[in-house]
Image: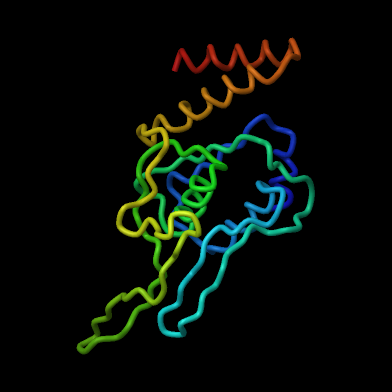
Length: 190
């Protein structure tokens, strides 16, 4: 993670492509978010039903390398984006730290566990509930709604165009402006 963030620490924008991301470790979002916020930020909480305890997920305070707390963040989603990938998109959206492009996500927020039934069957039952500190709810069953709705195929070019337009406004370097203008022209021809 540190090596990946070192590669992009001086960019004008960051695009996270979560369009086909089925999830993973929910705490990875806290690690990545450590680079995206200047100070520790409460991202999400997991309310565990059996034990009755709450686990808070915060952005990591210390990271290897440079933080990019002022760099614009764009997240690409699709109907295949699920679980921990949705969590990352959901909390960055509601903290006003990212703009979401693409399709509504699949809608899996609550951790679950298999329980055995008779005759070799099993059932998956939620054992906890994700609760966002801002919305006081989550994306279970509804998915994360994009800020800019487009097909998953057009999500990258739509986000990239906006990132280039914003970079064009914020730079005065003639060579950078020329390169940005060329990239914008290339997108028109797609």
